[in-house]
Image 1: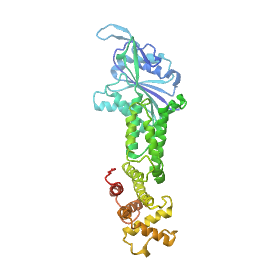
Image 2 (image 1 turned 180 degrees about the vertical axis):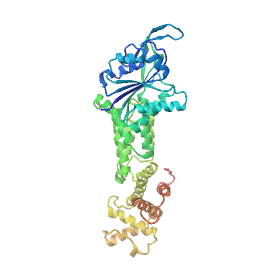
Image 3 (image 1 turned 90 degrees about the vertical axis):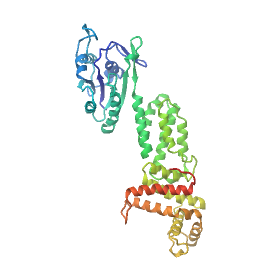
Image 4 (image 1 turned 30 degrees about the vertical axis):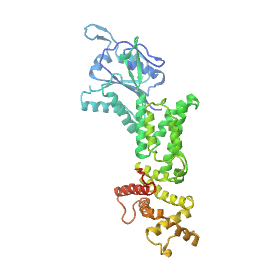
Length: 440
């Protein structure tokens, strides 16, 4: 089980007694938000000796709020009973270890980075983090969000709680504890969406979705429609990206996954994470050029999508095979029959190499039926579309072969030139097949 780690900054102010509340929760009357927050997360009931509570202390906070038993009120010299936070935590009877951690005052950039390193060093691999930001320096909430993502990457932690005790908003000696965890959740979604839009990786989105909807579906017994739509969105997005990453041409052009994706997005509401909808709309926009119906031209859009997401080998593979599929479709050949697809390849070879009058040099499929195959190639090489696309098909074939053989061939292309050439070839084919429609 992951270690639980609570981190909070203790300020130097003179704190008055207050009851902190969140939904149905009410804390004990306390001067310290740390006590209220530990009660809120049920530290006494759920935490063990393996878990840890770290209170960050400047020299001033340690002096006036940590181990004291009395303190003078502000602007007076009259000392009053004032039990410091260390004693308060000891009196709570907690099983978790409690440690006061010295930090600098954070008055400049160097001190800020030292605080960052101090807090980061408190975290162990796989920790479950609980943050209270109430008495932080002005920049510390942002620092904690950045540090949280830094630790997620380097130490595989999970942020379970972030809150802020808003003493200034108290009413009749009750002050709210504000839940800030949705902010880090939105940040996770934003990073996951960026990873998807830049690299075509849906893994983080799928993982976040399942984590977000699991308790909702459990509580509603599968009846929460927004959660169901988010679940369908996640599954469909994974299906689409799997198809693109593995070059599943028939699925890309003959299934209606993009339509399913758009319908799932339309069914979402803001009740789970309000700012999430614009993030998901950005994902939807990346598929804007795709037809929602079965359409072989989706292969071209898929090639462009792969190229934009740095999936260059998939881009050129899908482009070349889509060209063949479109010719098959226009001439009554089967897009699924390997031999009939090879006839299209042969036609492109004949046209590109100007061998129309030299039939003895034609490269026909090994299993083709002699004269029937030649007749079909004779028909194909007369088509304007085959002549228009022959150069692009040749370039795409060379690029694909260079990829597939890892450059182990004569005159392998440089990586940057290959990437540029793939993009140019996709655009050229689109200019021919979808004129006046710049899908770049």
